[in-house]
Image 1 (tube, rainbow, N blue to C red):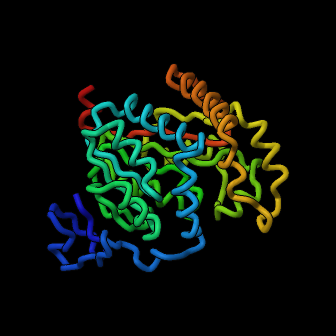
Image 2 (tube, rainbow, N blue to C red):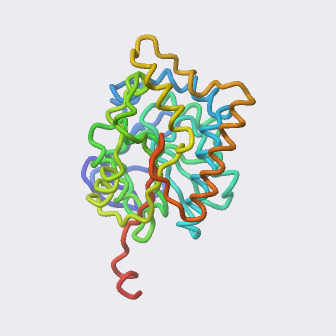
Length: 295
């Protein structure tokens, strides 16, 4: 179901014109729900999309995270027929979902139109929206809502989680990833305009406050954490930080690191929740009171 961000009306329609107040978002190849934020704000540098589009296919971290995301969707939401990725960036994660789950209806949202341009090129036929993740114009629309390394860019991350709760079907759920450990803060976080790195209990509390039932919280990039900590300890000045330093490893090293992350994914698939790592991943469900009472 669609939500009018002006009057709050709920409606089902092919288009986006609200039947109650007549509001219709502007369109620049995709609906613009927060056009005032579409080109710049303090949460991200839109110029980074060009670099991301080059780095993602060649970096062990992005490839391994894609496989883990698909694994978690298949395990926790095997009957999912629709997925919205909030903060889809260049569309790299959605392209992996499309290849692995061709029958699932996919949609993506991004605050910046620069990112949506790359996503549209990668994902012909996928519904894309320019929107603020704190005000998602859907109610009980998707089986799964995902946000990967998005919440750390948002001051009001609890508002974003509440909006994701609204957008997902009762009985459906969300998968989120965030950077872990405040003590790991470095110039890389400053460069990326992060607002925070998360503690495990912090993410769990915020998911619960939004109304979700927590199914799983695990770390990722655990085996590489010592190397990551050493690297980050040497990167304290954002003025001299090289954004390619962590994702531009030589091919042999890249493959070796990918093998380590694949071993972590193997452990996670077998029920192990890793205690520490560069990233933290949460899986949670929106309760369905009617169905839950029957069971």
